[in-house]
View (cartoon, rainbow, N blue to C red):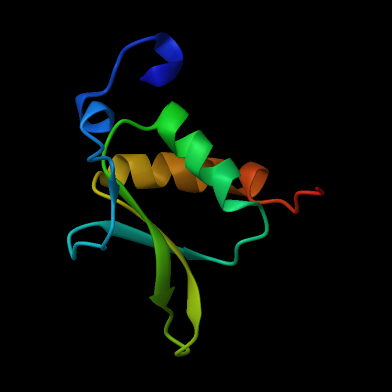
Length: 91
């Protein structure tokens, strides 16, 4: 992990953040209150695997922020920290 001073091979080759969401990724659809940069920075510092950050359609037919992880364990870890991360940021 980057916070422990160990380079992540996926990050070195810019392969951590996906431009599309593969079907096997575990998706989290959220209402985004924090800045995207805040959540992305937390992911890069605390999670090792690949992830997707973008938009996806929810069950109501509206677009929501989608954060998806290749590892289901990492998705759970992120979901546990989400209430502390996804708060309104004042500029």
